[in-house]
Length: 286
Image (cartoon, rainbow, N blue to C red; front, side):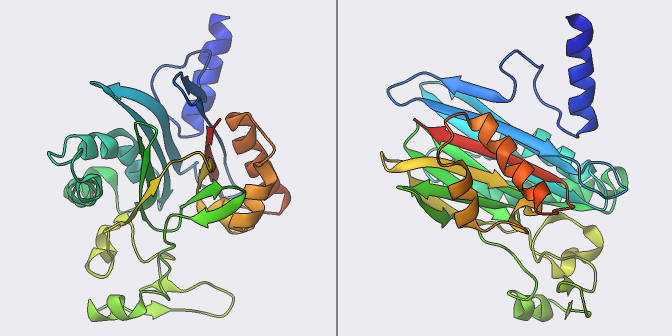
């Protein structure tokens, strides 16, 4: 039994997911209250030659008399060190902001900026790469605060309808802002638009060589969690490249188990020829 658990730990580390010590419920969380919430995750390495670059956080925790759900997808590029750093530090930086409970959106924005500065200050150790991020903080099962930089995405299902909560920060959409900073957006035949001919997102953590032309300011939104909300999906762009929001919601609406739902979405993306690393979290409201 011990050998099997050690093997599972090694597999998770190889997949670039490093979390609290594994328990029999790892990957599937529950916290009992009047409305039951479950959360589950799944991730797979893509077809690229580099190591897995996705990391995630999926946990429920108590903070005094308050209950928090902390969920995030970090999709690294040009190495996985920045995404790994975000997994370990971003939520801690958010929660220690003095205005977290009074103005969670502002606390999130300040923490994103502070964390990006930490990453840039440690660029010799963390390397020249970067990472996108989408974070969702569930406060007392009543309020969901979502922030993102890049193209990892959060989608909520309300009465069967899909609603995107994050913003895809594509270079073509922010071309004027990038050009005002002295950068440019290129698009070669057969390729996607890129900042300075390199990065396919307009906002990200890290990426020191591009930072003058690249923002790490998140878009944020607050969503009320009421009886009409069925579930939330967080996933890296490897999923969204091959599935629409509506397709993803429809694919798992009949599934009660959150972990099985996350796995099903990734398997569907792979069957549609997605070659990217893919990570996915599903939070179900029962």
